[in-house]
Image 1: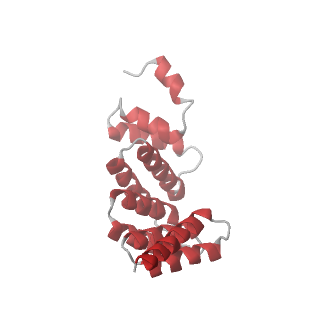
Image 2: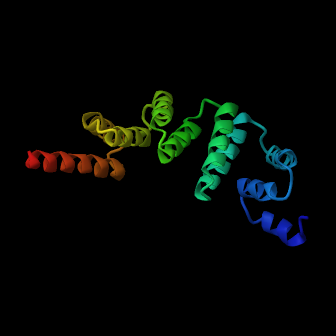
Length: 172
């Protein structure tokens, strides 16, 4: 049963948090209809719906519910596939899950959709570094830095590979 305290708490939370909260008390079909009825008061576009699913997935990632997050990212992609954000986020989740093949696929799609999105190059470089394809990783980190010279993660990652290569050269 949803109490008055629960209802007042719902208005403090963001829409995606409200939706996740209501899922605990209502069947998913009802909570989804409730959520979309309020969400669609302002905009009923696929872009907004994709953003809501993406936001829900990000909350679930923070809560450690990775399988649920993956399902929400998939919904965001199914609703609107012209945004690179859910593909990028799902690619990052695949990295976290250790599924590098699917992560590479999503990150390459992001790069195709938005060639100046530096984090996609950085994360793709991270995967290649993890797979010991160091030259490709360096090239990707460098590409991220050409796009965004202030992107410190790419500097750090590239430097780590250079240090690894220097130390392994000294051991020979």
